[in-house]
Structure formats: structure tokens, C-alpha cells
Image (tube, rainbow, N blue to C red; front, side, top):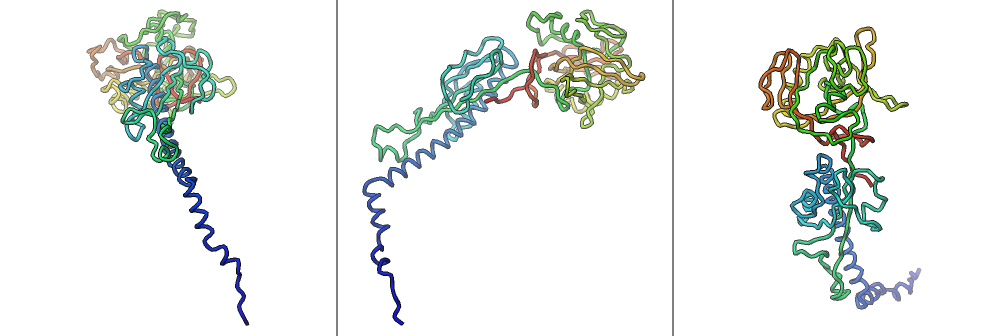
Length: 383
């Protein structure tokens, strides 16, 4: 039998080659290829800028959270925002065009309105919220604000400057939301003790004065504080629960930390006190787990209570959480063991005591809550 063949196949051979030749001759493929290369470079640049803006916004918020002296709107490469923006660029350089936002000390300027920048397209945080916003933009090692037009200029002409990318990030800070795993130490002091230590009265009408040397005693339950602020209870206002020595029920995962209980319906947070827990048990925390923080003058976090609930059956009671405070321990006298401090070189009395000062510090984890703070903050990125 004679094999039939498709005569159309012969007629269409070479059609693809002709089409490619036409596209190449007209520059369509070269133009598309050039744009693909340049646009791909733009996407990579934007990702680097966004990472830099995120890190810079967190750094700026960290600095503003801990006080006016470290809060700055500087866009210089030597600033915290500039350093993080540069560190996230593959070529080691990018431009910070704005560091703005809102802080209680008025160090940050208001951010420009009406701009739609990647990362900050949504509305700014609610009025009164503390936040830092950082804008970054393309900058090359030659100082140009445009990415090198690798192929685009060859096709589109010398008027094509290259691509310029922008990014933006916001970071907010505020007091922590009470959480069972907040990471606060297993000791506590009263609201009135904290107010007295930072030079505040019950109305909190003035700014707290941090960094003043303090001795915190854990402490005779019959002794009340000089400033009661409405606290009441057996043993005097501001006194520790009887038999508890200012120690709290430990977290099941870390015996040096406090175990919190959050009421899902009311939102109230409390933490237990175990009256049978001996003061010496926290001494092992001071000489062990907390020693690097003490030697390095790193802040730790203390729960502050504003109410003491009755002790049930003489064995267990509760404190109501007021706020979380930041404290730098410089030394202690606990269970007869003296770890001298530059602030104090001898035990002040027969009670267990820690030496140091209240300060402002950012907690490593947590979620931002509402209301006033006691020097402990959470910083997080927001849209």
C-alpha cells in the first residue's frame, strides 16, 4: 500500500523560525527580555528594602520605648534605622527617607499623609498610639537612587533611568498584655512600692524617675507602705501577703518565673502565692539562672500588684496584677548570702532584699496591651 503523507507539514516547516526572526527584527523579544530582567531586579530590591524597613522600624521603636534620650528621627546611615536598612541590602546600602510616628516625648515628627508606600498602605495606628514608621528607598553603592538599567536602556533609550523602589514599615510599642507565659520573675512588689521608688504619687501626674538606687525588701507582712493608693488588707496596705515573703507560685516550666492566671471573661489577671514556699528557694535563682543578668546589668521583669485577695485555708492566696515593671538587679542579700552591689555593700536588715533600680526595657516576647506602663514594653510590627 502506498503511504500517504500530509502535504501541510511541508508547507508549515520553518514557520516558527520566521516568526522568531520577525520578533527579533522588530525588537519585541529584546524589549520583553529587558523588562523581565529589570522588573525581576526590582522585585528583589523591594524585598531587601522591606526587610530593611521592618528591622529599622523595630529598632526605632525599641529606642523610643526606653526613653526620650534614645528616641530619634534621624535618617543617617549611622542611626539605628540606617544601620538596619543597610544591613538588609545585598550591596550594603539603601536610603532611609523618613523616620516618623508618635511618641509620648514628642521626639518623632508626624508622618506624611496621602502616600501609598508598600508596607504602610493601611491607615496609621489610632491617635495616641506610640509607633515608629520608617521609609526606605533604593540607593546603590554609587549613590544613585535608581537600579542600573541592565538592558532596559539599550532598548528603551537613554531617557530610561532604571527602576526605583520604596518600602515602609511600622512598629508599635506599649505595655504587655497579661499572659500565662509572660516571663516575669517569681517575686512581686506592690503598686505603692513602685510608685514610691520612681517618685510618683497615686495620681501618676508626673513622669516616673527611673534609675534611682533601690533596695526591695521581701518583707515583713506587718509593715505597710507610706503611700497606700487605696490598697487595703490585713497587715497594712502594700504589705506582702502573710507568710508569702513576696514570693509567687512558680511557673511549671521555670521555677524562677511567675505563673499567671487570666480570667477569659473579665480579662483580670491574678497570680498565686504559696505561703509554704520558703524564701531560700528564690535564692538559687539569683545565684544561678539570673546571675548572667545581674553581672551584665540586664533588665528583668517584676509583676506589680494592686490588690491582695484573702488567703484560703491559710495555705494559698492571690495577688491581682497591676502592671509589669523592668528592674536591673545589681546585687542581693538573700538567705544570708550577700552578693554585693555597687549601690549597696552590706545587708540592710535581716529580711531578704535585692538591690538595683527600676528602668525602661523591651520584653523579648508578648503582645501589646492598653493603658499605662511601668517601664516594661512590647514592640511589634503593625500594618
